[in-house]
Length: 144
Image (tube, rainbow, N blue to C red; front, side, top):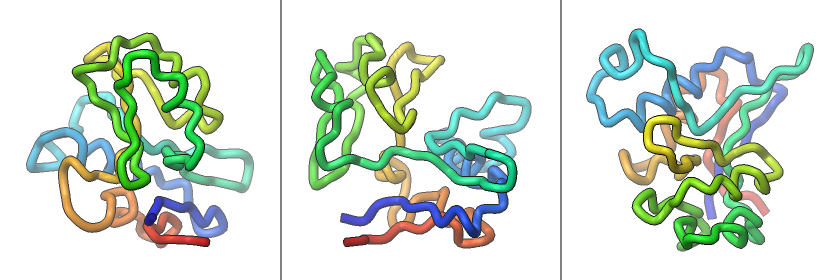
């Protein structure tokens, strides 16, 4: 299964992946309309530690503890993709607490959780974070 991977040696720390992610999940047709004067809520986050920058997003783990911990059945896995059914999510945030990567986060607007779903709900092809990375530090590929 294809997944988002980060080649941290190429990451510039520009945060464009975050903006492209937030735009992709905004349900708007223009980036300015979607993001201007708003707090962005991306499903990928750039972490920085001195000279190293890297983007963190859901890894869609094979043995996903977030999936096992979801008491409402809102998290499901199909064809390797872990997704959130926001209608089922009760906002207990257990999945947020157990994710070892910090990739599941509260959706402040809806009181449920949100996470990367590879832009499956809003476009075809590569996720927007991959398309928007100017240095090809983020890739969408299958690895062994």
